[in-house]
Image 1 (cartoon, each protein chain N blue to C red):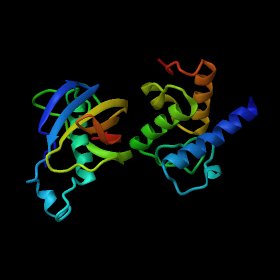
Image 2 (image 1 turned 180 degrees about the vertical axis):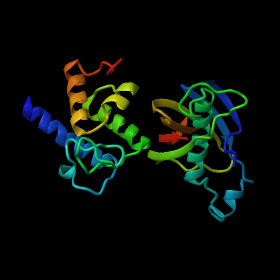
Image 3 (image 1 turned 90 degrees about the vertical axis):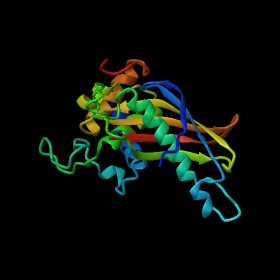
Length: 103
Length: 134
């Protein structure tokens, strides 16, 4: 399970960097860094400063790559960092994948 | 520039279908290209975006994320945020009637992902996905 999550996080970073054409090394994204807004949160620096268009990109990427359905409200609640994204995808997958999150 | 002549089918927030009649008199044929008129692909995309805009605005979606829209406070026009997987499969030439269909895929706040297709007759001439924001 631990390795699953670790792989999932690496996969998430790779997907985000690939889809958003970020010119950074996926491995350089800290697990706890905020995705949106450049401010540090919880003491961790290095936010990606993504915008709303990129958020929708990530939603589409998650749905395509992991076969999950992301509900609108889970974006606001669970799109803070790689950590929270991984937890969301992991939960949705264990719930059977195609159920809406947070609905 | 208005790139839709008529909306033929509309289900607000779900899909819209419209036509653009492409005539030899279109100003863009002057230079695109001399002796070889071909409708510029970006203008096909513009037509798609306008049909998508009609679909979203009919639902009040492109305004401010809220679905309330009143006559006194019309929706702001949607702007193109991304053009993805766009393929131009066949040239569009004078005399063609472009039939453009926009189908809503996914929304997040004020950003909307829309699948768009353009046909001449039964033939698919271009298709892809757009994200529109406001």
